[in-house]
Image 1: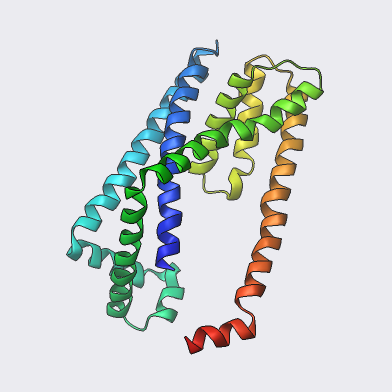
Image 2: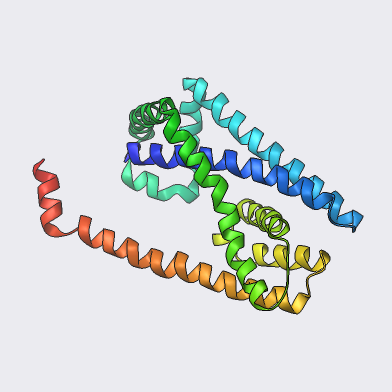
Length: 239
């Protein structure tokens, strides 16, 4: 479990680097493309907030992880927090929870260090994260082209990047509502008819949610059936 979490975290950190790169380029592109000055100021402020929050989060994690006593106190507070009752059910005492966390943290950090040494893999993941945003905008570009609208693909990528970054910060699954509203608003200000961009966004996001939730649920159910089957559980217990 710790190794899997290490893989996921490393992937997320590299993806965050790609997001910051695209967010920076997209924000500056839109600031100089939109004639509505107040919105340009809003984008500049939003970009500053995004960068500051990212830096503060990294510094907070780094500062706590460097001091074992501070980390232990932080973990005990998490254990005692009322909303995290599931932790108390799994671990009888705070000491057991802290000990379990440190053992998993050791395996977790070992996995991250191993992956970071492999520079070729890191570059591949970074490249994949940089391709992700243009691919997100590609479906929307095809829909608008099908409606007879000639929209700059670069501009569409910039709008999609900024809008989806907004969805990451707002704690709503998939950024539902926030992403769609931001794309419609920005593209309307850039001269695309509101009715056309609204229809294209709704179709594009409907396909996105179907792929994410429906097929994701089916894939998770399949994996759950395979790895929690009685035969698999008995074999796991024997080993």
